[in-house]
Length: 131
Image (cartoon, rainbow, N blue to C red; front, side, top):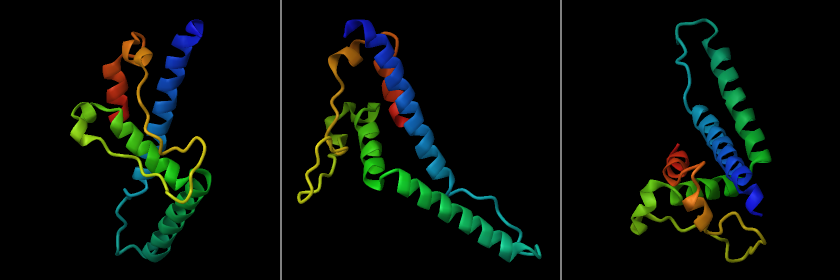
């Protein structure tokens, strides 16, 4: 519906930014504040950090399918400036023995309307995909 196009593009942008935030959060778990080995609580602090990261990643895996997450990373890459050169396209991996309806590994092709959108420009879309 033409009347909803601008709303759709706003939703698309919000969804991409939410996906980016989730990926950044997951990557942030690899960063950690350095603990002082001379601190008498070093052992318990170290165990607490590991426990926190383990439980957080476990919850994310339970709520976010690792396959869907990997497919999102591939999709964002394939919709970015990096793939202006077709040699850089990453083909999504679909399991041969497990065909799914609405598989997250299906290649996403940007529709012509998104390319021509003025409220969320193609350049801005591609930049967000590399965020």
